[in-house]
Image (tube, rainbow, N blue to C red; front, top):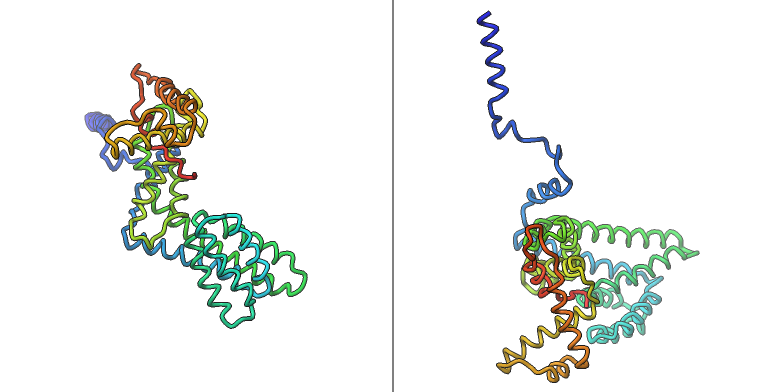
Amino acid sequence: MSTSASKKNSRKNSSTRPLSPVSRRRPFGVGDTTLSIYLRSVSNKKPLDVEEEQAAAKQLSELEQRMWQVVLGNPKTSVKLLKVLRNALVDKNTTNAKTLLPNVDDILAKGPRHRSFEQAIETLAIELCEMDEDRDLIADVTRHSRNLAKGAKNNSNESAAYLSHINEVARSITGAKHRFIQENLGLVVNIAKRYHVEQMPLADLIQEGNIGLMRAVDKFDYRKGFRFSTYASWWIRSYISRAIVRKSSTVRIPEYMLRDRNRMKRTEEASRAKLGRSLSEDELAAELGVSKKRLTRTKKHDVAFVESLPHTATGKVSKLNLRRAFDEYRFPDA
């Protein structure tokens, strides 16, 4: 009797004994929310150092140059695609685009059978990569090249090989971008936590920041020497700030007024630093190139936005992060 009683008491004591940290640890994903699983997976990623950032950015740049060479380097379609490219450069109507027009015209004049054709296309590919920051030119020309390859009636084997080569390079570019983005997801989480406000869930802030990260990967130029994390932080903050401004306020302010408001603030700061005084309304309106009525309306909406920010559950007005987001909204896509 005494032996069975002692065993029963020992089992009872062991059931009430606190678990060790190892025994309390749950299997990954059990009982967790989707956000917590995501945060744990991101926290396990080691951030890239300077050399790794430069290598990843260089690989992506080389792949994009390779895409231009493949698309424009096919003698069967090069003339048509160069004309498409020329029209796109004319429509773009920027200084960098205009500087490339003579090069395109020179290649068109000599034709794909000229002995310097491959070298000219290679040089043009490098210049196009530097100029096409938004990647809209390569997307447009690649779409036309695929249509030409699919619509070719003769030389179907050549067209199939050409299309396969384009798709292969496109998959390599997508994979390189994906790896670059994956390695920097932790940066987005760290920045999003600083902006966390009651009116917008952390998951939404992270999602907006990830869009900014993808934008930074597209526009990053490793040749300028600065770190990708420094460059991407600006884009991530900009997209998060834009989301907070658009979704947190109970008053929906038109985007052109937000744009006017930011221009007004920057002009006022610059004038105070340069002249040592604030500009009058007439001077500020002339500097911005807007009417005095529009300037007054912009200032009125600036005050209305802050006063309309919602209250927290404790009754205190949660304006700090929202106002900071409003001040940091810089319209990166403009």
